[in-house]
Length: 351
Image: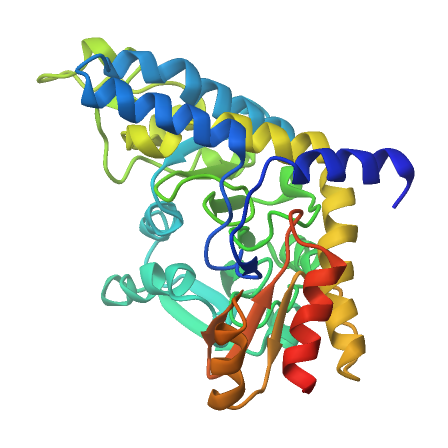
């Protein structure tokens, strides 16, 4: 990491005030101070009767724009919602009967369940090991749906191989990037991406994005058409006609206002540090932990460890915030974490 990247990272770290050794971004990211101030102002305004919903629109537009810049996807191909699964459901509903959806075994349920719910309508879901996913794409595959980074253990999807396999067989690719906000990805080339922002993108829970290529976007219609997806939202609150916005905005879901307050500053902070710098830092901490435990490096910000319940309890008693997933201890690192925190965890695990 060169000096400018290190300087940006150090400056960003001053935005956070954790009261624990927080190694749990894969569950929820920490809120930066700039976003926290916006949230506090919003709550005071609501409590004082000074909040007007239309006043939230500029912040939502700013967040949409910040996400477009971060991902490299044109802003007119970015839709907003509350949860990634809502957008996965929209994509699932667009598939005709007989469509095969290929996904990774033990994939996070928000990626898989919307497609399984379409099985009575003729959609077929096939689950294969992650490392075989690209090889299993065939002429009968309509869509590959997978998390770019696996929630349970931090394994990375073979994105370039999947793009090549899907292009060769005429399939589409959907990536859930909720756990990949630390990882640079060629999202402008991916047919569909969905992302909840409350983990690596440091937003409140209840804000999510969808992006799509122009061709793939044309196949999607609104699953839950609503006033906020209208061409003129504030004049579309009652009755017909249905006059949807252009581009991805026609897929917008009405925002949970609290969840969008402060999101733009959080996204801008991530963008200022830069995903390459964040990847080097986050994955470097993950590999520092693995190396200290005599395990092979994995190049991921999420590390899954087989430890006893007693040792997991000792980790918690030491004031280290982590989680248990698939029967293993899961720790995850982001820009606010340090090498000293990794070493603190290693001391607990090896004592």
